Length: 239
Image (cartoon, rainbow, N blue to C red):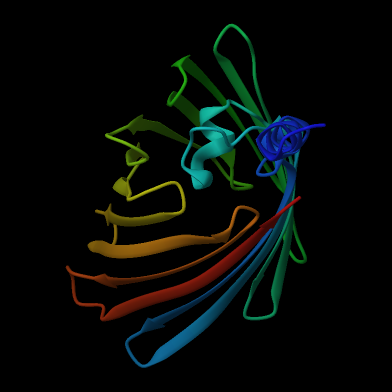
C-alpha cells in the first residue's frame, strides 16, 4: 500500500504543472477613473482597455505588475477613453523581437476631429531594460519623445522600477518600490516648462489575488499659479 507520505508526494507532483501556471495569463482588462480639479473647475476621465498578449505571460519570480515587461511580451490593446463625454477609441500593437528590437504602432479615433497615429522603435538589451523613441501625429505635427524603463531585483521578493521620459517641453521621472510580488508604492514628477506646471504624485497598487489588482493615486501641482489636484482609482483582471 501507498503510505500517506507517498500519496502526498504523488498529489503534489500531479498538481505541480497547474500550480506553476496558475498565475500566468494571456489577456488583461483594466479600468481607470481620474478626476482633475483646476482652480474652481474639474473634469472626469474614464479609461477602459483590454490587452491580448501574443504569448502567455509567465509571472514566475517577477513582481506581478511588471510580469509582461520583464518577460518581453507584446500584444494587441483596444482602449476607450472618455473625457467629459468626448470619446476616443484606440488600437495599439507592440512586439519584442529575439534580437532585442522593440516595435509598436497605435491608431486613435476620436468622435470629432482627425484620427491620429503613432509609432515607436526601441531596444531591450536585457530583460528589465528598455529604451524607446516615440513619434506621434497630432493631426498637425509629428511629436517626438524618448523614454527609458528599468526594473531590477532586490533582496527576496523585493524589487524596484525606474522610468524617465523627455519630450519637447516635458520631462518626467518616476520610481516604484515593490515590497513583494503583490504590493508596490510609487512616486512621479512631471514638469512641463511650456505652461509652468510641475505635477508631483504618489500611487499604490496591490494584487488582491494573482489575477486581480487594484490601485489608487493622487497628484498636485507644486509650481506655477494653477491650483491643480489629480486623483485616480484603477483595477484590472487577468485571464
